[in-house]
Length: 274
Ligand SMILES: O=C(O)CCC(=O)C(=O)O
Image 1 (tube, rainbow, N blue to C red):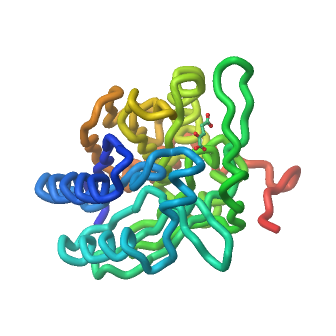
Image 2: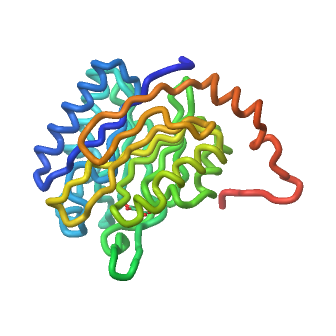
């Protein structure tokens, strides 16, 4: 398969976990009815993005949320990039994206590698490391028709990680995220564009819808960007599903016509995973 539709569910996340799971399922079913092959959920889609909720609602794998996503992937024969959830494992909690294939199989899991610890005076302070441990693996899953790099939110600010995914064969990078109303307007669009252009990949960034009732105001503006830096699908701040076509032949064409990856001076510098 060289061309397929990807859908990003920019869902409104509430305090009610069951409500969030039902919403995610409804949106995934809708995306399937529009013939999407890959459906993406946002970061922490089953509970509010705050330390207390994430700790309270953390689940082990397999657990309620992942079983529901896996069953849905199987029933609908879809790839589901399951946003992220708080994952409990051996007395630690991770911010984890579970990725399911069309038989309901777990294709991979990405544990957020760069934790969102920031303090922008008078604007936003957040310390994810109060809740989460950092993951330590670069995640690239193989669908059989393309390789997909998966990272979570703050991870997208680290160009080395994105490039490592491409060196492992990723032609598409998918990032469940939840930027906010301070850093979103400042950096969201530019980061998506530059990561897509530098790495010559489709870059799919999924946000929750903005919920002004919650303590964390997600930015929204989920975006699908092509390898030449053109937007192929985008939302504003409200709840919606964003669709875009991924064309792997176009990745090849851009990489040939503007040979950035080929022209790296590997004799002068290298990037290695340790
Ligand atoms: O990088 C940013 O500005 C936002 C990151 C974030 O919200 C997150 O990692 O959850």
